[in-house]
Length: 309
Length: 253
Image (cartoon, rainbow over all chains, first blue to last red; front, side, top):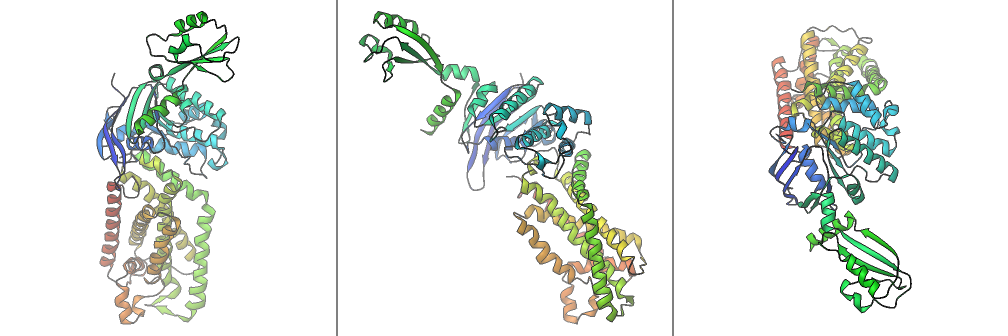
């Protein structure tokens, strides 16, 4: 399958010598949602800006839909929609006019029916004649999405689309993103909210100090790098972990009622069956069992720390 | 050429103008009336004629040029600076448009606004003085070229400016004095020889002189020189704008 976004050795060094991107290689398949994770200043926005034409790369190349972003910028940019990090909108303009402007700017002739559909999908149709300054923060973010979608892009960049919005709106936004994916739009999402990537992304790319640290299927990443813990609640408290169970490296809670076993999900044998057998042989009686999996956030923090070390 | 994008920019910019149409219309009318009251009635009554032209009529071309130049600069500089200030410039930079299309859209809208102001002042002046335009085609050509060239200049200022103070700096400290000292309200020939020589270093003199020639057939400098000056100024501004977009100066990082 030909990737819809193909980045090879893309670099950006600013005039003051700051290296924002270090020879980034990344391919993104059509129809997928890729979450680009990274701490502040990692290069997420620079990467998106370079692909969209806002920042001029100093090395490497990138293609969008097979079109070089510099030599065939018209064809490449026509395929891209960008929702920026900041809510940047003309405050005195009406919603429908600003959306029409965006469509025209991308060379598409006026299509009121399509704009109506887009605004209805984003619950903005009733607000179409309102000035931008009259809208709530959440509505403004929706207008940004409408502007990015109104020229029917095949690739949509969402640069921290839910930064600073409440939980309800964030979930609304996830539903919108899911709807876009179903309509065939490829989505590249940068976010600080790991739970966001965990909830909606197909693949995760981690970037730090201008370098891509890894790109992997979300499920595979969590399976490969995720750790699980098994909490064993005991019927009676114990003073210490029995010697027969020493090999499992169990932790005992201060009240003596819970044993915590940590294991790798990717390991061929987790050792749970044997642990439970040994537990019984040691004369301990279980009252309950509970497993929890480490989140993507923990994986992400671990990766970035590893890179810093 | 992405004509749809040019139209989109032009319509969007003009909608800003139409939102404040009353202000856009009334402001130049009031200014013109005030100029005629002060220069025409109060001072003009003491000046009989300039180069054989009634003083009231004499100041009309200068008055139009003064407003057209300042309005063209203000409209174009604000037009491109405002998206930079509020951050919507990202949309322009990420759109499939080249520099020429952006310039035609923004400068075209600013020039239209300036032209509108010029026509309003001309119409208002008609209520105060008896105007006969000797070379109407040349008058329209001069007016259009001035609108376009000063809109280009304003566009450059808008890109250069990093804040509102800088946005006002060039128009207030350079353009307005040059226009006032460029023979808007007097003939250069009325000045002492040394000031005449200094005045000819002022590029605005050539524009006002040429424009006045289109009205009365008389000018401070030959009409060919005026045409050359405005053509040269337009070409210079176009070259600077082309360089800005080629290098991304103060636009792209």
